[in-house]
Image (cartoon, rainbow, N blue to C red; front, top):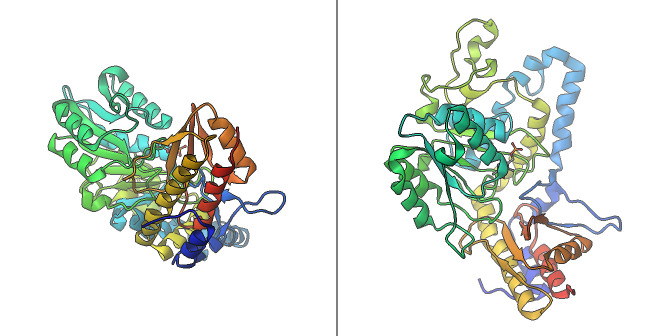
Length: 423
Ligand SMILES: *Cc1c(COP(=O)(O)O)cnc(C)c1O
């Protein structure tokens, strides 16, 4: 598409946007003078769906009226509550229903998945991952390899971008997997890199891992609800994601996991067990001897946190209505439009300098701007204009126009602010 920086251009795109009305289903914060924020932080904490409060009220009322009876006689029986989320969560990641369960939180789930899928053997115990991964992932991986008696520096191979480059080349990743193949137990990557916005080639990485006899796992914190995913078809072994970024489920809310059927339907796959993963029809018989539910559900430990799930359900319903293909289609226009406006403002305003380090071919919402010494002042100026982005030390501004609730006009306003910035 040929973009231009006129306000009419943005207005016309909003008028012809088939998803424009979805913005009405969210609560968008306002400043004290009543002006609606341009909220570009959906990569960090998504906005509240209007349906969240009603869903939560239903469960609070049932608890008030029914007490323990709510487990089986509530309007949405709590005994089954996690299942109300399964189908929509599975659709988001391209999985079969029995490959997905909503449970716990992201880092907790990574540990549980590594228990099952990081099975080091003498001579084949290493994990290959991106350098500069999200800290929680680094800590999880480090503690896992140390738990198995290895050192981080020996057992973990971190891939760095080439000298002078900000992101990894796909071909370098695949080459490294083959180069270290005989020693690799696991290849573990994010789906979308949290700092740079780079989208990794999940199917190619998975294939390469399998070719060398390793498993492939992914942290989809920044990928789920953002880019199209086909985890089953891509033969990914396992993945986990959080729900409070693009999934708009609220701070710290319950996360999700994917476990491919080839592992999930095998009751011999090792795992840590708890009563909620026990075979459902005999769960309340309280017997000795763990029999897992088939599929990812057999990894559950504790009974489901219903209030958080009630909130998440409001958001997943919106995703089901809109559909990931339509959202990805809007992103394929909205994010390049913002990129165009930022570059256009930079070319016209000598007070501005930055480099967008997010690769042009990245399919997601996020743009990461590597700024110069004026970066923090620029960020503060944007905030003063009710444009909410996030600042990552040492000098990156991340912004993510989200197709569910950001408009083309939002992007245009950001371009205007960039044009007006003075040092
Ligand atoms: C946001 C994020 C996390 C956060 O982990 P929690 O357990 O939800 O606190 C972990 N990994 C990545 C890649 C993230 O982007």
